[in-house]
Image 1 (tube, rainbow, N blue to C red):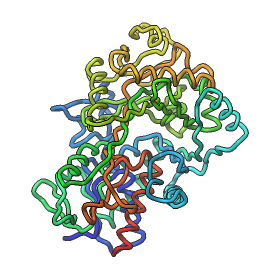
Image 2 (cartoon, one colour):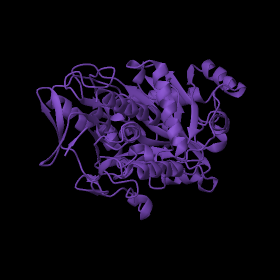
Image 3 (cartoon, rainbow, N blue to C red):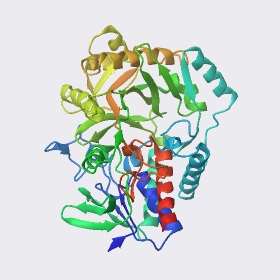
Image 4 (tube, one colour):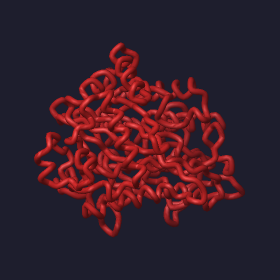
Length: 468
């Protein structure tokens, strides 16, 4: 069968592309191919079997054929905290191609779909008097506050929403799970389909939404078929964990405080993915263990800690052109020093230049929610400029939320965000080199989060439908 569109990847960009086809052109033949499992098959062995480390078999995740936290229907977002940010101020670079009003309309459209499938009605107000007071303190410390309405789905609700969307789509969009696309089929600069092993699937339109875990594969495809790319940044940093009481004001009035800071060494640091009353977790990126976090909406499942990421943006100049590999190497060093896990260190020990021990963790006032993290020394892992940038950022944040820079605050490392070198695309996200080949989502370096990735998928579907 020849398809009207093949979607590579079932993260939110791919899911909402398929959903839009289902709604706007139900007679279209659409195939979605995903190397992970369907929404019901996504089970993490660490959580299911109460083991302390992600099992690695022959250098790969023990979840076969791919890590169930980062792959499968819903992508990395399915197991995330589920923060849906209704803004164009951050969350990706779609406004480089579309007018901000268009992007915001797309985000609101996706938000309505999520509401239809069970998203909570509560949403934050980023323009209250309390938020202005927080912003005033931030400016005084050299921090810029990024505003957004935030609809917190919650990890458990996020999974339920994705399951409901899956049920709505499964009879109308053909889906192949535990199936990895190995190559694209290109003839005379026109996409003709994709290859899975020796099997060919034909289509005149292919949407590659491979996600962060598929960014290296996407880069290989671009090099093979001569698609020009521009190097994006890679973000390297730590996940910070402190007591809820320290972050109480931010949590109440913003839920997620998005701040950026310019450091003395010329880097930019940002806060990312805050999880009030949440948990630090491990995610597996093709054998590289990284710190992350999530939070539940159900009060019974909440912890007493808040966690968030501090990420330092790294941009490289010629001749170096493999920033993702650099971030993987830094992260793997932490894995090696912790014997396959990630490192946790108290902020007080970082300032004193000493490693954290299990005894110091037990004596601290912040109880780690990631029990398998290994006490150690992040100074042996993170480059000097990265560590200095993180320290400057945490000291600046202490003026906004006093107490965050106390010696008991925990740093987990490494947290990294991988982005593909961004393919050269038109304003419709179609390759300028290969007709019918579309790119989207976080893995393509076009978005950074649930809202814009979902919007990206909707826009691509509409463009293909318009051509038909």
